[in-house]
Length: 284
Ligand code: ZN
Image 1 (cartoon, rainbow, N blue to C red):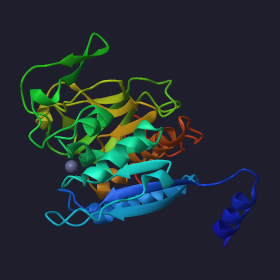
Image 2 (cartoon, protein in one colour):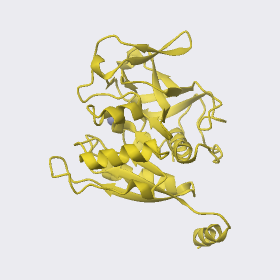
Image 3 (spheres, rainbow, N blue to C red):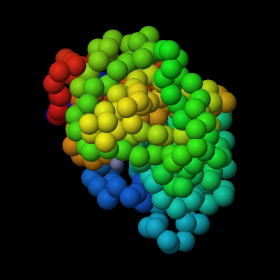
Image 4 (cartoon, rainbow, N blue to C red):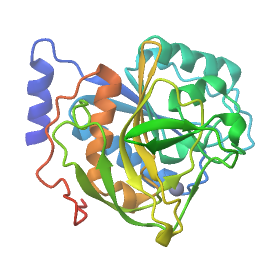
């Protein structure tokens, strides 16, 4: 009842209108997508900023021509999708949406999608798997405190053993990261490494050390990125392999803040009291 009244009060407040968000799913090598999409939906709704629709594509191998969401109704699109190419018309509409100032959030394996789609790879800056190689673009490598392009030939995308790992904030004064601890412990997840792509107009907000003891690269790997794409804003989180990874307060908070920033360019949400510090995970 209290929540219902709150909604009524908010709806009655002058000038208040929820933004609209669209989550895309339907195919993913991560079989938990039917469980993780409702988590993403809940997190968006909990901000009080968004009403959320879900657009589910036909299954892998099926005719995709019916998949034509009307992106123009939304301020934000979130991808939990890694599968067959969308119809040409849908691809063009999505590019128009982001170019025109729409917000886009790419979650975990969404950066595995569409290795051949040039504009999509510009939006996510770097991606993995799907046959990505040096032809897809450079690696982003931290050298002398700067993110540099490393064109070394090799595959794009891998990860070591799943484990809890520390996220290091690299840009503390971005709206998404402002007020977060400089270092915080993320819930057990895959630590994506060796992502590569066009890597233009990208800022790495946070990274994680990929420990060779966990079969990692020995490099600081980009974890949270923002990309300017024409008038649009993209938040790319490599985190979120499964329900466990998405239960971490660090994942939840950065996803919620990244979504608001992608939609508006600002973040009005407070950092929650249960946000993790450097030593111990925090889960909900
Ligand atoms: Zn994964």
